[in-house]
View (cartoon, rainbow, N blue to C red):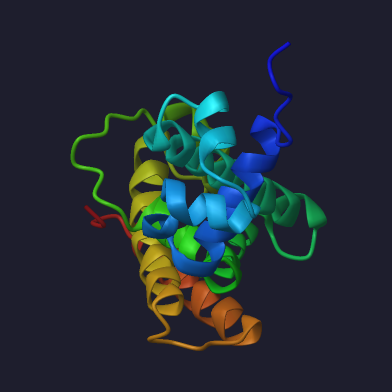
Length: 188
């Protein structure tokens, strides 16, 4: 009878996620993860093909955490839904700096992705709030999201240390400014 491994895939992924939170994805090596688990590397390689597979699972787990945080903040009713998505993104950068860097500050030049379905509810929310066409609402979102991502990046890298009230105020300022610009006839 083969030996029973004392860790499940989920436990190893959680340990790798925790290691990433502490030291970044570069720390998720076989040796580093074994040390985190208090084990040899054997259980890791009995459940995963290689460390790339483990790191890909960490990426998926981090993405899920980020999306849950955004969805919960949007559903909380504390902020208007569109603003809540930006607040949650920035809070994730503040509270989960290494996971934020992994998700949103890595080289993505070799990746292909279709954001269409994932941002469709945000585009619809902008249309509902502003009366813009779908095309203009998409441009509005892109410009707003560049601003949100910039704030989040500066917070994740400790360049800024803004509190939630400041974040809320500057997001309102940017939103109102964009809304005004898009309401003008010659905004293109």
